[in-house]
Amino acid sequence: MDMQKALRARLLGAQSVSAIVGTKVDWLERPEGDALPAITLQVISGTLDQHMQGLQGLQFARVQLDCWGDSYAQTKSLVDAALEVVLPRGTIAGVYFRTASATMPRDLGERTDTQFIHRKQTDLTVRYSAA
Image (cartoon, rainbow, N blue to C red; front, side, top):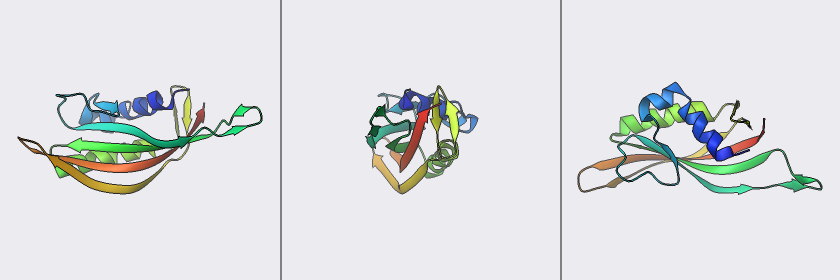
């Protein structure tokens, strides 16, 4: 069971997300030179809870979701689409995602030599197990 691959596949499999980013959903770092909009994901913390016979079936991870865009409106549309996909229950690639929660939404951004890049960052609590 690979929660990270499954979460990326879940986002890319949603028409509402892929219509905005294409295939630009990556873990940890956006590939240099990739055009915007895009999504990056990063595991911030998690647990590997155990019981007497090994790992528990249900695991938790805190995942940082960053949505990047050329404009605030584009970035807001992307985060709204992404949250519609990752918050409900669902099964993909052998991983069962329970209802997730989103906290601490933040508006961020950075100026480059040629533009201002908009970023909306949200922390997700992802609850998952083998399907």
